[in-house]
Image 1: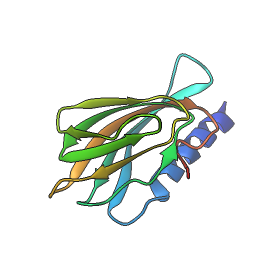
Image 2: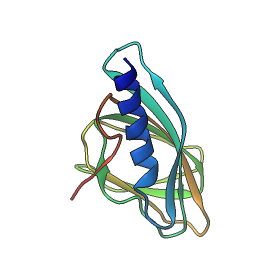
Image 3: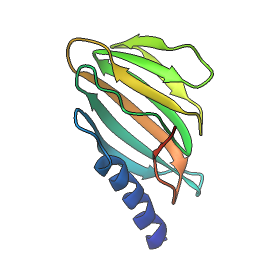
Length: 126
């Protein structure tokens, strides 16, 4: 059990450490789910104006809510859409996506990932 918790913590740490200038993810919590193979990781993602997270995937679902600013969300197989503060979105497991701040000020997103334990919370994609 301790090893599983350590792996989950390392995955959340990797999510925070692999960041580019102008974009950051701050982990708020990492909790085990009732399903023993999944955990929930909740973060606040912050985007400077004009900055994108970069194309990536998650080994589980992402539920997001724009706290501040304007975000252009690109999800594979869907047309790009613009989200403003107060709007929510959902990304299915394994789907390539990207978010970019298209507003003039900072953008903040509250994201919750329901992901498989032992896997990185986010992985870069082409």
